[in-house]
Image (cartoon, rainbow, N blue to C red; front, side, top):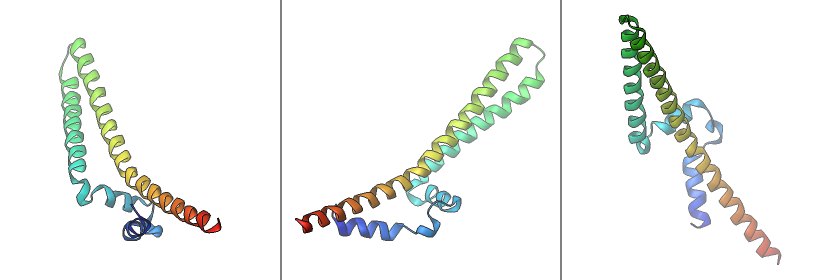
Length: 120
């Protein structure tokens, strides 16, 4: 990738005033490129939420201690699944900002390389 391509990518996608706001991160996550990941996160999140809600109702509906322990354990696993999905989404959101920073560093390294060659 040459310098002009890197500059074009940075200039097209980068707005320093909105770099790390929650709105820009949400916009990056719900972009057209990420729709399959967003759908995956929402589907699994809803599945885990439905499982947690079902276990909550069954926990209070049953009278046996063994069944209550089972539903409580499944509830905790479902809540942990929701947390994993949120963490996965958070990591996917930050992936784009890291890519931008790497491209910016590549551009700086290329500029420094040219400056060193010019001084020789």
